[in-house]
Each structure stands twice: as structure tokens, then as C-alpha cells.
Image 1 (cartoon, helix red, strand yellow):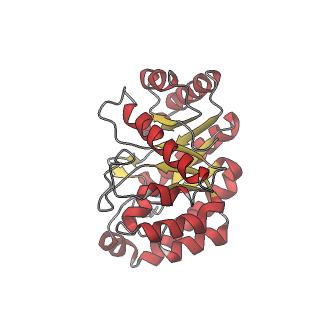
Image 2 (cartoon, one colour; image 1 turned 90 degrees about the horizontal axis):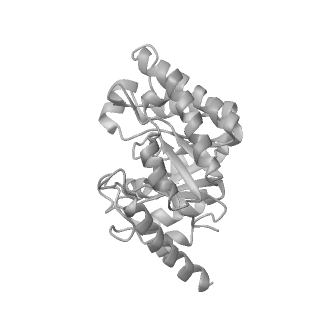
Length: 276
């Protein structure tokens, strides 16, 4: 029953073993560029089997965040950045194949956090960059179907809470991964607007990244230590979705901050739903 103890880790067996001892219901692999090489994909498949054999059924692969020290943007011009374009396309296609083969989910970022001025300088306008990003996401959706989902960003290309983007993802019927902190930062710490976006997109959300923030920068705080109204947010969440706690850890081999966040939010969820 939602919320789940959802933990993330790299494909490092030591990190995975630390998470599995707490018997999570949801496990998310935070992959890197090395994980989508031929040997990396073989290892990823083995680690998926390891997690599933431990009893975890809900498994998510998080597409690599960066390539060549830059964010792995789906809105990348093939003519100007051919290596980055080849990577984002081939890695996503290969991971969709793994997701379908292993019957797991692939999470792809619609964008990351490029500044508006940089986007406009390269594409001419935000709209032009967004059009390219949605074209790529349409393709990945057609390829991956129910095995792919798209996560919101801080970038204006794919920022939930932005009425234009919210409308576009509704029109396309995308399966969504809703990062609560990203939307909160986009909305400059406005809990009312956050909850409205969560309500609007809730029926399409299949996975949540639960993480706190002060609403200013990408701070990735444990739940209850930032400015998000979690009781209000809980009332807008889709209980049919899965979730993980995407918290910055002091030690990558100790998931304590994620587990403490789950304890905090579980109490909030019970309070909210017991009152209904």
C-alpha cells in the first residue's frame, strides 16, 4: 500500500545489498553512462535479477543523467552535438529493450536544469527546444509503451507546474514520474501551485520521487526538513503509483536518510487518510 519503502542505488552490488536488507517494495537503479555499454547492460540485467530474486517486484531504471560531463538532454541537436545525440538515442533505446525484456520500468528525464538564456541561445526559443524534446519523448513512448515514463525537470523545457507543459503532457497521455521537489522549485516554493499541478497530473503519474526542498535550488533534502507541505501534497497523490525517496545521502552505502523519510511520510499519509 502506498507509500512504499522505495530505495535507489547504483548498480554497485555493495549499495544494492545495503538497500535489500531493509526489504524495499520499490527499487530504482540510478544508472550512469558505463551502465549502457555492452558489458554494463549485461551487469545491469544481472543486478535486476538479483533485486527481483530478493522479492522486489517494482523495479525502475533511471536513465543516465549525464554524458561527457554534460546533462543527458533529450533536446539535443544532432548536427551540433552528434556524440551526445547518439548517446541519448541509443542508450534510451537499449534501456527500453532491457525494461521490456525484464518487465521493469524505464524513467527518462524530459530535461534537466539548463538555464533559459542558454536554451534560447542554442535553439532560438524555449518553444523550439520544447518541440524537439516532445518529439523525442513521443518516439520513446511509441517504442516503450507501458515500460517507459517521463520525469519533470527544473528546466523550462519540461517543468511540471508550468501550465503549457502540464497541458502538453495531458494531451499526449504520457506516463509520468513526478518529482515533487522539482515542481516545488519551478513554482518558487508555492505549495498551493504545487498541489494544483499534482492534482491535475495525478491520474497520469505512475511513479513519484519524494524529496524535500526549500524551493530555491536542487537541494534534495530529507522529508520534513524543507518547505514542502507534505500533508497537502499527500492529498493530491495517486495512490496507485509507486515511489522512491530520492534523497542526497551522506554515505552512498547507508540509506538512512531515505528510510527516515519513509518513516516521516508514512505518518503523514496515515494522518491524511485516517481523517478522510
